[in-house]
Image 1 (cartoon, rainbow, N blue to C red):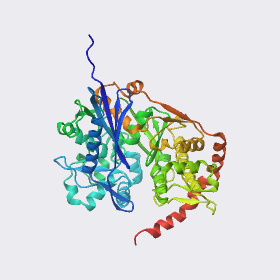
Image 2 (tube, rainbow, N blue to C red; image 1 turned 180 degrees about the vertical axis):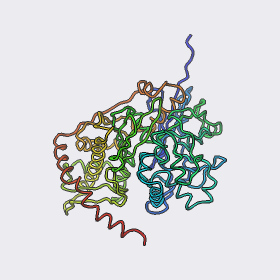
Image 3 (cartoon, one colour; image 1 turned 60 degrees about the vertical axis):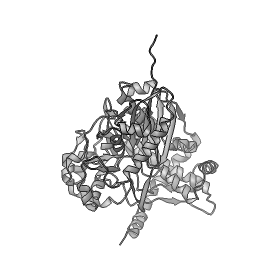
Length: 512
């Protein structure tokens, strides 16, 4: 008689800006259950917010407890991994406890530290080492802010962990960092694929603050007994090392091979091309694209851009209308022809997007008349976000080492808006391969948990074993023709024409 086989399940955690989500999937990647809680952010001031690391952990525990109840009788959870937003970090003391709050990735209070550090090390040298500019959202300026403003607390720090790795540490008791999140710290030497002693020395920071680098999917060890008792998870699951949310979503989408461009549509939007190696060129430095490393069973890299407020811009617009229903707004926008009756939107609510690196740029509507409806405005928001993404895509494709993508794969919560997808495909002039799993980031993390548990030999084997529905969204030929003219004649000149006004407004709005 054949032995009874225990059904194996996986859990992927997606620690995002809006919510902390956890997905329970079977060994074919099919969703069994999903749990979610709002991400508990503490708003300090306009553009400033923090996370209590213990509050984030409590949300994860509650998610896991909820999923434990959905594991079918006799089944076991084999592996768990976590993906998270990229730049926020937790300071951890010698006893493993968090020190104070984590500054959110989008917080602007670190601009002074970023500028001072770039001047100290030199912009060219910083780019040569890290492949990045001194963006204030990255982890290193946050560390410098803590040192400047909370010196007593900072002096007690022994380890710095990005949020996904903080959760993995709480699950397993082991501290480590994968290359995708290390790439968002400004502390990684991109050619050496190692922490940069030169960067840390220039910042006056101890290299020992940074945890060991390991490949994504590395087994960190079993879930701690105390966590099993808190959550009721069945079996003896192991913890896999997770990574950056957009990159983990790319794992589930099959974007881990050169030539695939991933469009990850979340609160922020990431557009990145998988490439064989880093793109450390003068053109990339000038245009400010972010890039990074990924290591699974094989190493590769990515280069791309991020719209800091994409789904966030949609929610901002809804909030202005008293939290108007999404479906109603989409229906109103769908009734408006392409071009939104002449309304145009610049989606720079949180900085300009590469290739226009400009921290002083601001969002704007143009072309409004007394006949402009809210449906036209909402369609203009969607079109503006798609135009901005098209500009990023075109500039990435022009980089040496990147080239025109062979395929565009799309994931994220924004894929639920079918009008937005049709607008995007038409503005790109390219078909989109939309991954059917709405929790692609959590699924990507779950696959890393499966790798840690030994369910598959590598990510390629995992992708071959799971069910993954993909929908193709084709451009509308008539829309594409109109959008092509609008992009060239109106959208591309929009930012340069408005930049002097934005700079003046930013200067006048700054505290004296």
